[in-house]
Length: 333
Image (cartoon, rainbow, N blue to C red; front, side):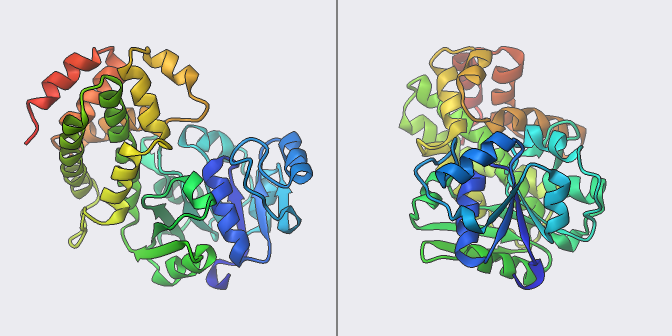
């Protein structure tokens, strides 16, 4: 559509499915990369994603499915990347075609664990995609509610306003409102951090520490997010209270749809980290985000991040959740 050309969806989870449904409302056809051929066959036979959001019908007649990442990238001008961040490099390590001239839209809301960089930086550094050609999707949107056509708002970040506006037109609907922003890096880092804080909120719920304490944690978390994002991606007019930052934090910290909250809740109830990971049917991005942001912060910005330290100590150092939160509570204001 316009300057974006043909769009390929890379990934087949719930968020990819919800976004594909939006694209099919406004685009004649889309390419969809699904890494397993048998899953594609089920898609075509059922008329919906056979694993995620199974009650959401899709017009499969307008979808060009492929299990070949190179074929998908060759057929498209714009890549909508919706692969969980732990699997991102494994997916694109197979790439042999040149995508330096493509547009890449990151809807990952995670960080690349091995290199501890945001997704748009990964495509810029590893595949030569231009800075004006990378976009980031942010905001308080659970895939389930988007797919059910409940009123939702997404922020599309790109330095090239024409491209962010073009992508907005691709996903606009009566129940999907879009906002344009130049803050690609801020949106991406905020999306990683809100998952970490959602794990903290879940732990508080699991421990039955109360709504009062959870609200205090969240109010301190948004200030912690502001300190880190301001240090690692300075932007003079960023308003941390906007929906791409605070809104996304709130919905992820409080919603029953939040896999990060649910992951944290299991740990708060007494599950080991390993057991909670095994219990989860989907990836809790905040688990990986806690380690990556900790490394980034330790290596450079050095922002004051007591909540991050608390979550990291529980997930990676075996700290007792109650003791760890008792310590972090002393820093709240």
